[in-house]
Length: 392
Image (cartoon, rainbow, N blue to C red):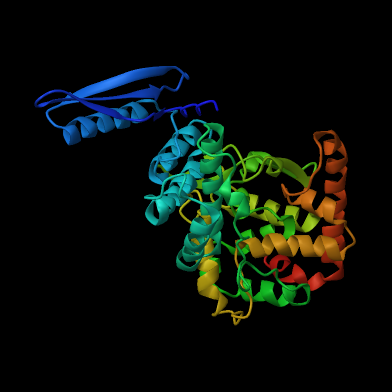
């Protein structure tokens, strides 16, 4: 039977021999990352010291090559290598998320080796992470674990990715945001307009705008006046506000998804709101449509905190209202007016819909249909905009 080949970055049997009193030789074969097999040896004053010195040399050889990933590598080291791989191709905010999730990996399972990280071992750890950090964090950790183990598979340290055998991470209850029920939308707008905090923070128009366009919070806060076309009744979504680690709030030239970059028609009510803002608001250095009261770039995290704080004040404790609620509300309006799911997803820039690049022209025509449907809904609910029109 043919002797099994020594794996990459591994050694064969260690041979120990006493050459003379007080002089021992430890010798083995080591297979380098290029596949070549070479003999290495060290000397020691005793058998244990010679063997320990040879093992130390083998360890240094394994750590010398940055691409060398072996089954006995600790997951904390694999996490560091995965971070290096992602650093060159990821956006700053994405890297912040990766680092957060990788820190959790290192904390909970960093001492495990790649070979030890079987599904039976990982699953209870993932359950603890979900209980300690929540559903969203657990999903993020699962994602980076999958990437880490894929890296290990590509380097021959594993034959398959153990994450594929883990249980799905369930939410375990009602988590997320609720759309504003359409039958109470008028009342909701009245509550928003009467709320001193929303008025003080200049968030009344922002809420109406997001309900009427389906933009994500960062997209709305990143909208600049040069992206609003008052002749065509369109807005171009090309950037978003984002907090960058170490830099603060920035306008970044991308959105959450590739399909988030879009040009959409908007309803006449929204265009009237924008026209009123353009005429009455104080200019700001970033040319933002929805800056903070001090003219700075808005933070969706701060806006979300304001929404949480005012839910109880408005008597809406039963609804989980977040900035995402307004996006869902817009989708609910379009769906109630008869627009298909594919076109609704297209209008709000949802990346989950599997649409090829060749149908982008058709998508832009549906954008006009969406604006007309939003107008039709507003026309059938005249009180929705009555309060705002009375201030003009």
